[in-house]
Image (cartoon, rainbow, N blue to C red; front, side, top):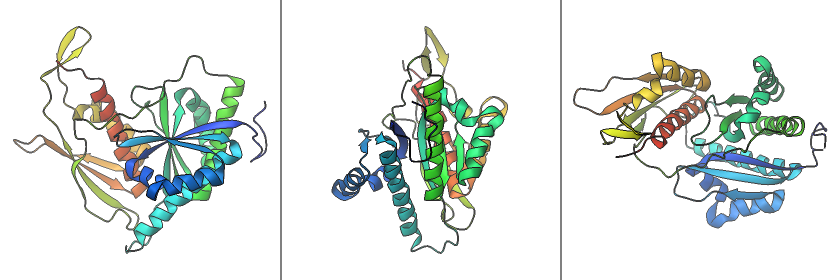
Length: 302
């Protein structure tokens, strides 16, 4: 099979995996499951939603490419509808973009980015969608998150181009070794964003200011690493990184401004202030969560 076929003529079966927050999943499922049922019937695609009490869920869409794209379009337009509804009682003057996150095997991300970023630049320019490929793999997996934002039509065209790239990779140079899929874990300590406050309407104008509290929960004094007991690291360090490398990476990937305040005397809380567009803030919050989840999942207990 040569996947280089005109748009809509990819007569193959594909699987696309999306990473969604609980609220987004609720929107897709709808009252008594009516929305997802309609999507399945009208698109002809299989749509499965991972179970479990997790802050994140995996939505898997499988079927022929035309069915996949129909289902994806229905999801993108449903999210736009949600945005429109949220703005109905708002004084916002600008409409935030629809944002979706694909889960893509890390082995395919190089082809998606292209030499010197040429391919991802081409996709951005030809579709009008914003595309960001996460630098780190999702916790305990060999997959990365690819965040797409824009108007629904732009997102749909972007996904079609990403699918062509993925098919070409599979056809020309299948990855060696099995892909370890990302599986969201139930929420556990630390409570990553506790007492979060929206200081400005996130749908207003071009910038919003989201102030979040990073609260350290009581943790054991030591963690087991191999056969050695080591002092437990300060969790804020995994966000900042050596000489600020990680926080700078999150700033660059998200496009948001991020400030971490010093802890007040006698307090275990550090305040993180994220400033930017709603899409920038959402991506920055996701990247910070991913860093902390990765850190916590790698810790043992005595």
